Image (cartoon, rainbow, N blue to C red; front, side):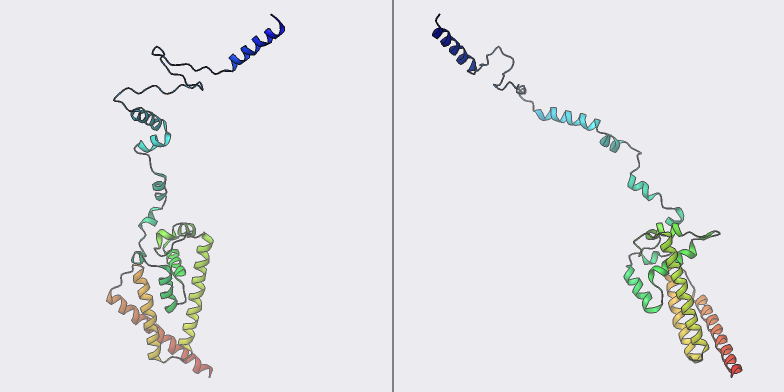
Length: 248
């Protein structure tokens, strides 16, 4: 063939190779092949749904999932529940402030501020330091870590340093208030009757706080305590009067 004939045959071959051939599926083919070479899903038999197969795979996956296996295992404690078991037994049984259940800190603090020099925080921690005192000292760490469980109106935990600071503040205020009161009783500012009134008011507030803490006082015990306090204060007033007269 001539040169032109060879070139024409070559062009025909290139044209044939660039065409896309579509393969038609016949009844003998088990599968139908797409033009992009992927194989579609097999047909689902009549009357059946693929949901069943999916559910079977989901069940198998769930069985292999460690989280689901752990949830289905009986006797395995919940981590949140395990944390609650860390509360010491004496803390769980402590019921000193059970009458204050549901009380708000601000309300308690306002009540104390109107009648005493101490705050609700100092009152609660001073009581706890008295109840959780051992031969080696006060259990500051136990009080601070379990403060919300011990006192209903306290919502935050305290460090041992914060517990000690509140305890020290309470002690300082009691000493200051005691010195103030005793001077008022000794300086002849109050008459004997007025001093009895002061003692009565102070006793009522202190008695109320003790009752809130769970101390059950009978009427006889209350009257006896009031009489003993009044007797002591009269003796203090008489002794201070004699002292002033001697110095004059």
